[in-house]
Image (cartoon, rainbow, N blue to C red; front, side, top):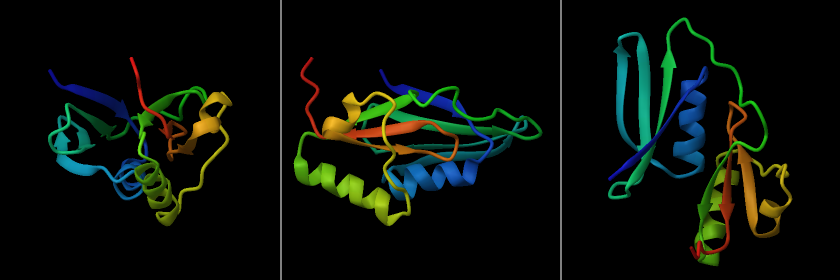
Length: 127
């Protein structure tokens, strides 16, 4: 089984830059003008998940409904976590305070151009 998380955006190029250049995801595929939609899939080859961002021409979707719309990536290795945070900073993205302070204790939160957020959590997922 593979998981695709799909989300529309009004700012496809800027969102791709955030996840590709900042978060370090690879472009896994893309399409243009497929029934009026453009899109791109980002992730890491071999992982069982990827993100898809789409833009429907002539349609507006707006921003995230709340600041607590999160994708959380657990990076238990401190050096890998620091590298992920530094890559975001080097791409011009700065951490933002989390709405839920829990994520600020061991993590760094970044907001994409649509207002959706990712957290790099320096902890292991134990469940």
